[in-house]
Length: 281
Figure 1 (cartoon, rainbow, N blue to C red):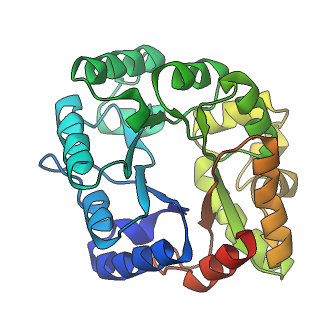
Figure 2 (cartoon, rainbow, N blue to C red):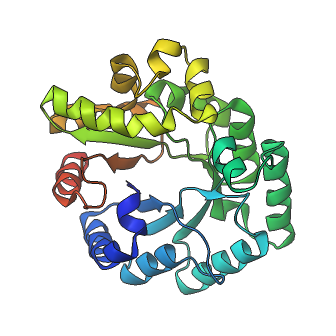
C-alpha cells in the first residue's frame, strides 16, 4: 500500500502504528510512505518497522536534493541491522517547483545528480538491492534497473506499467503506485479523484510523462479530464477497483502500492484496505 498525510502527522502517529499492525496481519507486503531523515533515523519508518513483525517499509520517495547521503546511509544501515531485509530505500529527483521553492534554481541536471548520489551510496557499500528509484521516463527507468532493485513509478496508468516493464526487462522490481476510490456514486468518486489529481498535474515530471502516453492539454488542465481519471484511478465497487489494480499486474507489475483515496486524508480508510485484502488474496 501507499500512505500519505495520515502517516506523517505526529497527531495521527499512534493511529498510524495501529493501522500498520493491522496491515501486517492482513498480509500486505509493504508500506510505501514519505518522510525525511532526522538525526540519522527517520521517525515514521523506524516506528512502523518497530511496531510490526513482517511488513516491509519503503521510503516513497526520499528526495535526493534534501537527504544528505551520509545520513541516508546511516539510517539504512540502522534499519538493516535492527530489521534485516525489511526496509527499501526509495529515492527520487522530486520536482523543479518543489526543489526550487526551497532553494532557488537548484534543480539542474536531475539525472546526473541521481547518478552522483548513487555513486556515493556505492562508495559507502550500501547494496543496490536495498534501494529503488522513482522513475517515469526511459532514461531513469533504465538507471533503476542498472543501479537499484528497480522502479517505483507514481501517478501512472497501466499502459505506463507495460512500457516500464519492457524497458526494465525481466528481474528488476516494478512497483507502481495506484490510487483508487472505493465509491459507487460517480459524482462523489470523481470529486475525490479530481481533487487528488489537481496538485500532481501542476508538476512537469508527471504531465510530461502523461503527454508521452498521448494525453493532451484538455486532459491535463485543472483537476484533469474524466478520461485521464478513468485511466489513472480505478473507482467504483470492489470488483471494479480490484480489476483496475489487476491491470497493472497483467502489465508487468511485481507489486502495486495501493493508495485508497477518500475525502478525509488524515483518517485511515481501514475498511477499504480490509475489503481489498480479502479480494486480492
